Length: 327
Image (cartoon, rainbow, N blue to C red; front, side):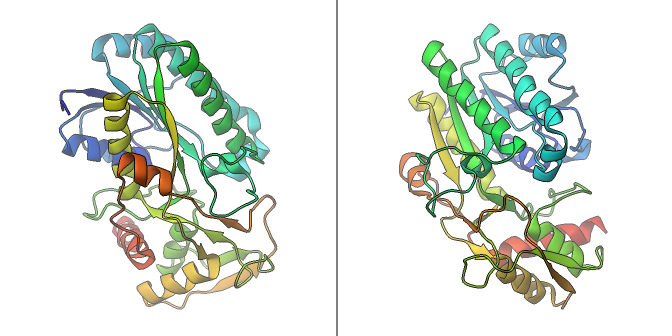
């Protein structure tokens, strides 16, 4: 593929976006990042230029498209904390949905027809079957998940009506950090289990809470599909190539196809860190599905995606090393 292709990345200063920007830069793509830095960090953008901008600023966005002339857009700029979305739904709909409409409007105006969307397994809600496939019914149970599903619906309709193609990547539980120690999760309010577990192991938190021990699973705790952030980044490179070369809109799950319980993650973190940290078992959180695991046959068959880091201990090790570096 012609590596002179220009890729505009929204939210590229955040956790997943920054890993994708690095992967694009290493492959020789011309990359431009837009981020309002509400949760991103300047120093996380290690390739290309960073423009500090909120996607609600339609006029400035239009100027950037006019100057940079992107061949493709990768869209990561979303709020992602589920409990916050329940408490402040308008914040999530304004940013995750309305600002995405702004972005799509500008894409159409400038004839940018390749769009890769950072979606989420939250669009499935509490699936009837696990592993869950891409053709499962979308039944999100919180404003965060609904905001992602709403964008997916818009993308589908646009692809029917315009010269516009998209790929939606539905992430399961993204974790870990850059294997070279250059990038990782920097959010002070991170809510992901592995991040919280390694913070607790390093003494940055007094204890770790397990929410619910009476689920219909092997040990009573929730089961999730954890995927290393660099495997997610690689999926975006393949998605870009797939979209430009084949020009076919599609939706893909991004996970490993198997899961670990909360207790298994906790024990693995204790083993990797060598710290027997304090754990408190408490009541369930509303809306947590007992099991959420990806059916990954489609992304492997159609895009040839082969994950490199399908190893829970390795995921935890990179997260731990990164968190230690932040100390």
